[in-house]
Image (tube, rainbow, N blue to C red; front, side, top):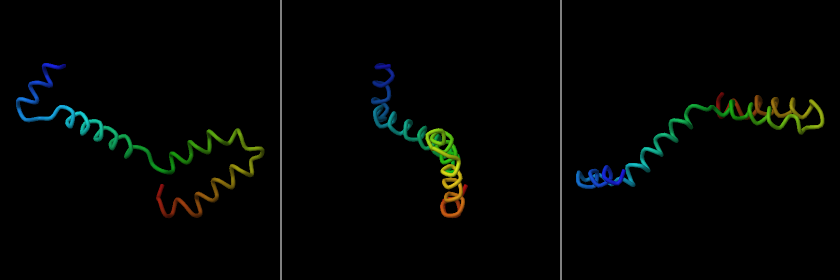
Length: 74
């Protein structure tokens, strides 16, 4: 791996910056794959067992559908 990095330096490539860019690109690809609605649904599923009754889950869903999803999209 060190030899490969030395070769990159000789060709004018900064191996550290290249690695940072690759990580950033990988992160951006993963971020685009998940919508806000998917995250919200996962959160509600994870937390709903902590709520004392079904009304709380319904309130979360209703609030998101009424105020959030029209702005952020689904």
